[in-house]
Amino acid sequence: MKAILLQHHGGPEVLQLGDFPTPQPGPGQALVRLHAAALNRLDLWVREGWPGIRLEYPHILGADGAGIVEALGPSVSDWNLGDRVVINSNLGCGRCDFCLAGWDNRCRSWQLLGETVRGTYAEYVLVPAANLHPLPDGFSERVAAAAAMVYHTAWHSLIKRANLRTGESVLVVGASGGVNTASIQIARLAGAVVYVVGSSPAKLALAESLGANHLIDRSKDENWSKAVYNLTGKRGVDVVVDNVGTTYSQSFRAACKGGRILTVGNSGGARFEIDNRYIFGKHLSLIGSTMGTRQDFSEVMSLVFSGKLQPVLDCEFPLAEAAVAHERMQSGEQLGKITLLIDT
Ligand code: ZN
Image 1 (cartoon, rainbow, N blue to C red):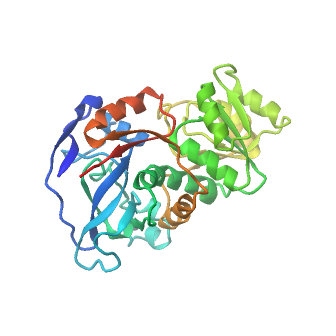
Image 2 (image 1 turned 30 degrees about the vertical axis):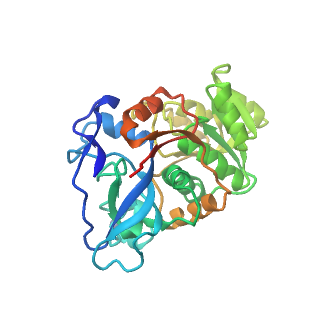
């Protein structure tokens, strides 16, 4: 099969189209013929590498994908060849205590498609059949792939971990990334009032189009926590979605007493100082999570399929131009999800 093969870490130029043996499904597995894949910031980090990361080379990036069932391993009976599917990239073992309790994103032998195993920048991908989700007739594979990981992640964080309730206020730090745009939509759907801090008028216009109620342009107002404080009548917001990390000092200030700070990532870097006095002094909860459960995937994708949640699409590139797609993502200029068209 054709695939974008990663032979070592580096810049976008290390993403090279090549041939790789088409995998064959074993017990419980399915082979999916991909039609669409989507980029996530995770892909850039895996490509660049971090201390301790261990990949089996050649590695194939990509957590998100949609296509059709091409082959099924022994003992897989609930799917048919040709079924249209979107992939849940959170790979739980299905047997450990966490998986059995429904927390498969806390699995003891947790794997993530495209990070710890080969992913979707390819004509075919091998996944556990339990990670397939049916795609309704006529629903775009591109849209499904673009939605999967970011909506799954944002849903788990906002709805399951933060228990977001109608009438609460949510601040999203960042206006245009995949998880942030998903968070804006999910928070609005949940009946929250949404504040967004963004870095440019174009990104804030996107946030507004997704339903954000209050926009703060940090290119004009660096002290955005004060702006949030003033906009909320000097109360602060109930929930802050902060996947930057280095912005915590402002997020802590923007939160109300008893506020919840949610994190599913650290686009500003992994290590930074925090002022602990805000955490105890304001009764703050710092809530982390990664990905979502199988139940979350089913819940959030049904909202995507019904059109209640609509991923924002940026450019689409053919699979062979994955490096160009990475350059675009790295530039930070994209508005919404960058996708790959896999035309076999
Ligand atoms: Zn498990």
